[in-house]
Length: 331
Ligand SMILES: [Ca+2]
Ligand SMILES: [Ca+2]
Ligand SMILES: [Ca+2]
Figure (spheres, rainbow, N blue to C red):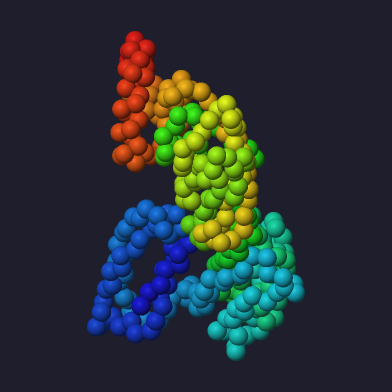
């Protein structure tokens, strides 16, 4: 019987059949959700009492559903996107107009309305990444009557197109990998961002390694987690004397790996030693941080599968104790 505008929260009558004698009250449970409707939620009750008589004079007699326009629409512009009508247009000559940001306020005349027909136009391409929706007010004034209907909200939603490729946060990532690192040792994590609509395929990134140089002693020394971007040692054979550095070309692709792509380099230096202890990597640093709560580096956010955590714990015991001793006075 009722509908709510998801953006403004305005609740309107959505169907006929209200009858005060049969159903004098309605209770609506409404929800507000953040993350554009996909996130955390709160609820409230709306108690409506059905009253006698006709619609109050001030109640709007027209309803405008949300209007969706694809970003980057090629037009030709001005592009007709909707038409509004007053139900008084049989009785009066109606003058239609719009106001608000995008109409008579910046960006001025992005949207225009034919004052006779009530046709709404967009005058140029829209960019969702610049502005994802516009709220205009529509006005209908009856010529000669001196009365105007209440202005109504027009919401224009800009529908996302996949017009941004993933971009790595760095052109080149620098990392170190101890030559004695076990398989699955975490070397580095790369990250790319995508400006298109969050939580949609257009910004859903998958990572991959395009190439490894040199391809010695094998071409698959490293593997990347396609979702997290974490790069791990994938095979044995690291040898600092023979191959002191590796260059990986990594790719981020949206559309779950099938869309637009961005690339970056990962320069890895192979370090000496038979444990990573002498040159702390992300993993050993995280291990150390976990052992000293007072100085824990809260920005480190590393998830280790249990087998790897156990492996680290075994081989790094002495390091962990050393760190504990060193930081005890601070605790
Ligand atoms: Ca865009
Ligand atoms: Ca876009
Ligand atoms: Ca994209």
